[in-house]
Image (cartoon, rainbow, N blue to C red; front, side, top):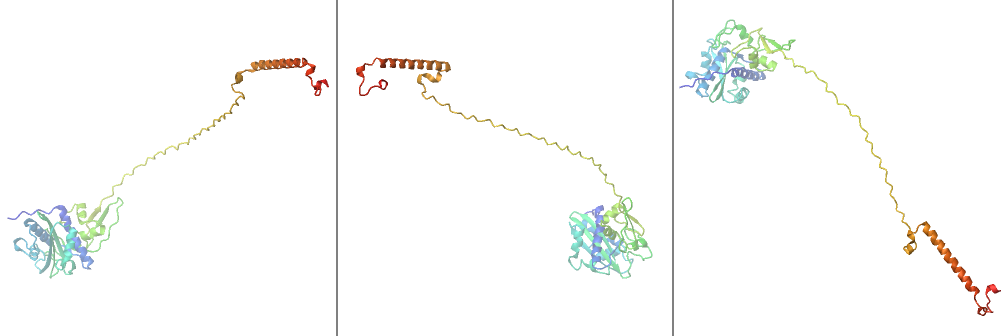
Length: 331
């Protein structure tokens, strides 16, 4: 019993277009025309991606044992003409850009990148229990027709009818970018030969960004004259009014007076001369009055001694005088 397929999510749908854009970028680098997105091939690729996700088997054999070419024809590609096609698959956890690079690893997977005869492409991505399943179907017809119709009529496929004007718009030509509107929005008018991927490359955005910005879906196709919003008007950034920050007052320098230190005069001690006769009779302690009285006493004593001495000389006897050496006074 098969496990029910998990429907592709919206973000994966956008990645499908990024995957196709990556393939076309390599073709352009190789000097080849980009491939046109075809509704029938989109349906066949998506159906096979979901089948692999539901079975958990990574194989080119589809439901009922169909081959890749049979699935393309059954989806309506070629309108009964002889169909030539190839299919690339990848099963695992890589990103879209990694898968696009991985397919360039051998000659069989390189066929969508370097074969000039291929004209149409479709892609699919589904998510299963074991990861993501990637598919691209690339084809062309012997009569140069695509999904079951002529260039002047409508083309049919499982994804619905597509007008010839839309098919013409998918023939990729260089994109001239639009000019910004006064409000900052950017609107691109689709011209003949422009595709989702080429517009995305020109403006430097992803295909999924264009789809989401314009409320489209993964099956949407472009028509000549269609206006696509690349980005909306700019939201003006509020300008914050600058409140001037008051500058702090410059402090007035305070002059600190350095106190002048007046040197304390050093007293030089003059040694007091010690009395000649220190301690004798306590003269150091005698005041002036006492000193005067002492001197008077000394003079009186001296005078008395002189008087006594003179009286003694007068009492001397004559015989005591040497005639040979008479006293001086007697001469």
